[in-house]
Image: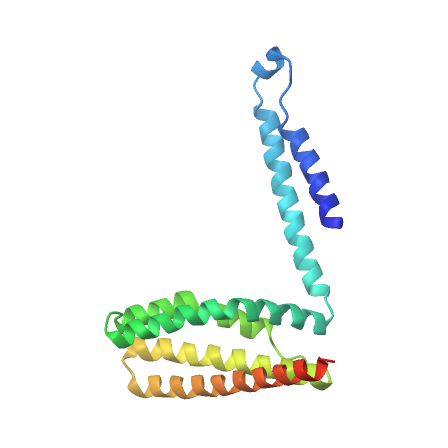
Length: 193
């Protein structure tokens, strides 16, 4: 309901701000001050909204902040991995040179995992199963990030040993995500009546 009220209020305010006078004479007068005022008010509202979002995010209890980050991660990662796997297929087919592969990993994949590793950091104050799951996600994001950083560097340096090490870390990340998925399936099966 709050979203509907907020949308209504915002619509009314925007309508008031953008409404033009009925009188033809008043419409012919320059509106530059009015337009500038609307632009400044819009910018201030945008800054205030961004500040509110950041303030609220920082105030979430650690368990809720982790849940929000996990949701973000779970919904975004499949697209990032699909893009990465497409790059791998192109590289294996010989249509993506190593330098370009490294550039694309650095631009399209690593930023997501860097952010994920930061957002999914393990908080030792979370106890029990929730803490175990948080620790598992933190480990997975960290391993995936580490493997991609190493892969990017190894591709740039044509370092076969570095590629092998990156693949080893990537397999450890795959094992970690398999354990996460198994734990989540177990949680879901025990939660069913």
